[in-house]
Each structure stands twice: as structure tokens, then as C-alpha cells.
Amino acid sequence: MKNKLNFLLILSILANATLGFLLFSNNLVKAKLLLMRQFGFLAPETAPAMESIVLLQDYKPISLLNNQDTRKLKLPSFPVFETHGHLFKAKPEEISKQLTELGIKKFVNLSFTTGEDFQKMKSEFSDPRIIHFSTFDWEKLSRANFADEILISLTKDIQNGTKGIKLWKNFGLNLKKFNGERLRIDDPALDRIFEECAKANLVISIHTADPAAFFLPIDKTNERYEELVRHPEWAFSSSEFPSLKTVLEERNNRFKRHPNLKFVALHFGEYANDLASAEKLLTENPNVYLDIAARIDELGRQPYKTKAFLTRFSDRILFGVDGPPDRGKLEVYSRFLETTDEYFDYHPDHKPRKGFWKIYGLGLDKSTLEKIYYKNAEKLYK
Ligand SMILES: [Zn+2]
Image 1: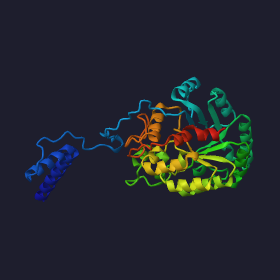
Image 2: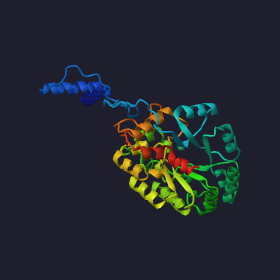
Image 3: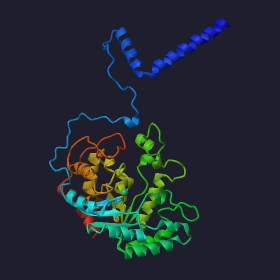
Image 4: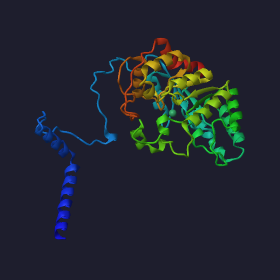
């Protein structure tokens, strides 16, 4: 009995010592080097300074590739028509100053406002370079006659000078009707509303779904794992949401139903990682445009295909960086579109990383650049 107890005591001391040893991972490195030397391998006597455990969210390697942005002028070479702007918490005078400084000739404010809020925003930001969009009055969804009510709000916004409608990703994913059902983008109840938009020559800027990775389980195979752990609210993999394929199909039905209405499928129509589908969308729907906002990360990791695509569909691609005027973003986007620089960050320092990769410049020709930077938008918003 006593022997048994002694044995257990020794075992427990050994286990604790091993655990303590393993807790300091540098010990493992030292042990490994010692072992290697014992077997005659060339291994240093002093263990290298090493952070042997780095949290994934802290891992930000600095590339040693000599690939500085050597452009004298780092902003776009042409005037810019920002088609995916937002003016949250911005000061009107500040914005006007920035538009001038950054060479932004027009700025589409994709606001989420309607009614009085829309009017207020429009009069506050009265710079003639700003084009204001309103949104559908989704609060009316709680009533059975929501389509009539939304139509009334829309008519007012049109009278108040809206140039288009901004629709956000909640439409199609989790906006609910009065009866608790998910509001599908192709719900026939909305047909009249979209037809009214066509009559008023509005442009519909629609953000549908999100990157494909956000619809997959957040596990070791997910290429946006670290980002989704930071932003679990962006995950749509649970059964309360429809699949990515379903939402995009419902949206595409809407595009087909209104050939006289112009749609901008924001964020490259969520096909930036799947250019074959993007090609199908543009070929089948002459009324649809794509913007590159917040998707140069996807486009720039397949530069050969993207260059061919943007050149072929140069009349259907719009420029936008998503958000208020931003010098850092303009520098990165113009580097991507204009140069053939390789392996650089798709985000300025003040914006977080998405997937763990870098991008390559496209070196587009002058005519394609001009169309993307402003000419296509000038035609669309005239
Ligand atoms: Zn946006």
C-alpha cells in the first residue's frame, strides 16, 4: 500500500514537472537543440530568441520583398467617380475639401436613409459633387400592406431628388415580413416598387450576401478564419440563413425581371472569387454593373484572369472604395489597377486584413482605366 502511494506521488511530481517544462516552450526548443547536438547534427548552443507561440490574430509578418510603391503620384492618374461612398459621421466642409484634394470629381453617397432623414442628409451635404441615394423604407415590412407603404415613401424620396436606392445585405439574408417569413429579393410583392424605380430612372446599388467564406463553417479550413473569429457577426453558416447560392439566385431573378432598370451589384456581385459566375451574370444581364469596392483582395490574387475580365467588360465595371473619401484606399486601389507591382497589401495600414494573402497589380491600359475610374459612371448617373 505504502509503495503504491509512493509510486503515485512520484508519478504526480513527474507529471507536474513535465507540464511546467512544456509551459515554457523555449525549453522545448532547448531540448530539441540538445538532442540534435547529441546525435551529431549542427545545432547552436544558445537557443535563438524566439516567440514560439504567436496568436493567429497577432501574426503580421512583414514581407522582405523589395517592392516599394515607387510611383511619384500615388493617387489615381485620372479623376475618380466614387460610386460606393458613405458619409457616416462626416463633416460636410471636411468632405468637400477631401474631394478636391483627392481628385474625386463625383461621390455617390449610398445612404441608408429615407424620408426626412434622407432630406436632412441631402441638405446637409449639399456639395453638387455628391449624388445622394436613399433606401427602401423597410420599417413598413411590419404591415401586411408593406408594398403600398414602401411605394409611398419611395415616391416622396424621388420627389426629394434621390438618384438611386441603396440596398444592404440584410435584404435577402434576414429581413422579415410582417408574417415572420424571410423577405426574398425576388418576392413578387416588391415588383411594383422596382418598376417605379425604373420609371424614375433610378439606379439600384445592391449589396447581396457576403464573401463565400462567411457562409462556411469557421474551422481550420476556412480561409477567412481569423477575420471571422474577430467578427462572428459576419458568419452566415448557421441554418437561420439561406445559402449563398440561394440568395444570389434570388437576386439574379430580380435583375432579370427588370431589364429597363440599372443595377450595380456591389462588391463585384459577390463573384470576385468566381469570375466564371461574374461573366455569366454580366453576359445574361445587360442592365447589371459591378463595382470593385472592398473586393480587390479577391481580384488581386488572380491578376491574369482579372485583367482579362476587366478589359473585356470594361464598360460594366465601376470604381468605388466603400466609405468616406480615403487617401490610403485610393493609393492601394490605383496601385492595383495601374501598376504591375507584385505581392503588396490590398488594404491601407488603417484597415484590417481579410485573408492571409497579398495582391498583384493589373497594369490596365489607359482606355480601360478611364472607363473604370469615371467614364462608365458618368454615363450611368447622367
Ligand atoms: Zn458599402
